[in-house]
Image 1 (cartoon, rainbow, N blue to C red):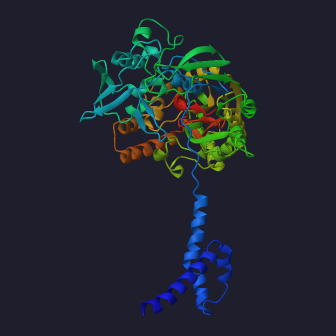
Image 2: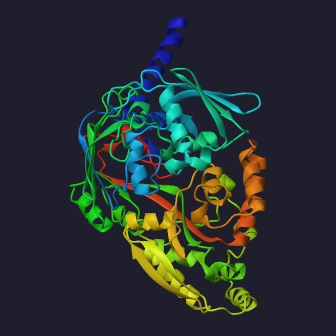
Image 3: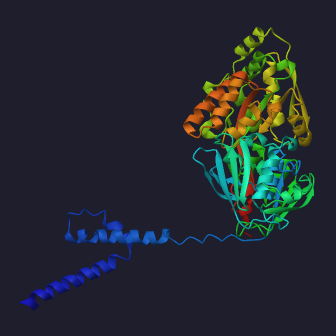
Length: 556
């Protein structure tokens, strides 16, 4: 009985196996039989089993899951040939205010802290820090075995000396106002520094990331060496040759405190005033990397299937028309307000920067930006401008607008557009341009009626506002305006650690400041860095810093 049943079953199984074996290797057969109505025969049902469909899918999966090529490991060595339109204007890290100087000095000198790609404060020369319960004592642990470029060890004595130099009014340090809350500095041992503050200061850590707070050698500078002539820092690169307005050569610091860095053997910065020529050099592959300020060039660099790599980071630096309220034509508030009401800020942005950016109020960090509708006359209102002038007695308003010829490259176009807009309300202007070095000195001395400027931004508004707008600020002369009300708000914000409460204070400050109209804030743009595809590892930052060239390498 078993044999009689087993034989037919065996035959049927064999037939089924043969049938499946014939159909499975050829997916096309499956597709054809799908057109046959399922109800006609049992064999059709067997032919369009899910088994065949699954097999086809498996074949596709094998094709799309090919193993990607391995990511190349960073290489060391090689000289990066870089270009920028403006050269450094000096070498003293505590005194420089020009962006072109910052970009070089931040590669040579290290601050205690730095900003990461997310604009968060992270360790640098200080590997950790802690606050006392009353937020008036800041204790910082310094990295061990850090050396200056001449081989001398960096210790807490160098840190103390650097900050005391910054605080000394005789130095004329650009960052002095950031640190005026420091009462004493203690050095219990070579790797610990303690800052005792007069009052809590929520902004001091962000201030310690600034290139103007770089650590210098007490032995050298305290011994009489001039940091404007001798550059000995702890940074990733050493200065080996500087031919002003031509070449700025750096070589790797082989004793740099970050293991494995820098990866480059050196950097050669070439000063090429015309950024269109810089782009031509990149396309001709005579340049590896470039710092671009002109948005028109930045846009062209990435257009038309370009092989170049273009990084485009939203900027914290802001374009502004500074009015010198100490000059006779601007002493009347209504005249300053009329100028602000007459200007269409979006038009300035569109004309000068091809719309690459957005209109901004005084604070540029995204979290602390005020609503433009809450600020005085941020929408163009010619009728209001004319009424303000009428209320002021219809004075004859004529002034000069100062602009730099090379930084930013949009300055002259901004001045020309503002000139045309102000003419519509009867205000006459004359544009005067200067080479950057001359421009900076005139700016620092407040030797201008008005100026179109690009001023640095910071993730913490205190670092943008206090030195300009507080009555004790070291750039108060440039701002030419302060008031007891704004002083009080700035002091309140500096002592407030809660971000929500700080924003409320800064919103109130921005409202009062724009009503006083010492300046006309215009817009923020983008930071452009253009490079060859073999340049790897560079991290662009919104504050324009290029400190992460210390991690950059050449894949060639």
